[in-house]
Length: 256
Picture 1 (cartoon, helix red, strand yellow):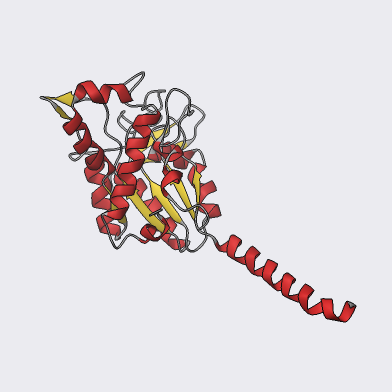
Picture 2: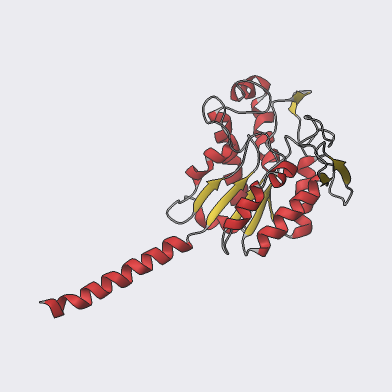
């Protein structure tokens, strides 16, 4: 009886080891960004809290590492990118979207703490903080280059997104990011050969169709942060952006 059970035990051990290996190798999508991606999920929601509904989580994991109030600059400065980068393994993905907190002039004041230089060039500004610490501030595009290049260095796939549109209309049309942060994100993605999802355009097209009276229902407190329904609309836009590009490898993880 004992001898007969040994092959079965061996097969069980091999099967469990195989399952553990598959589980270990399941890729992860890491989300990095600001409060429009990760919020408190009470009155205001980030699209990153909804996006998992569109993926087959038995085949891929999603980790939302976005943090409210952060810009490209402060996400790196505070060590948040280092944490994500240290976890990356070949086959993983990083979905990156910033732009809502970059607009102030970069300096050592409270308001300038998050600001970056505009554009995608190599311009810099040197800052000296009251404690004597020196900081080099770069352009918005420079930080995206860093995210993309370091993601690729780990064998992972960078996915660049344009920021969500705000509840701001002019002449009946929502104001888009196609002349600044959305444009710059797309330019860097193209330069680096990275996947780009124009979430700003996809959602803005919907907002234009629905009009300001309908769109304001998605923004409970200000013109930037959405409620759960607004976050769902942006998450749908991300999924639509993935499906629209047959070359995007994330297609194979989406639910049918």
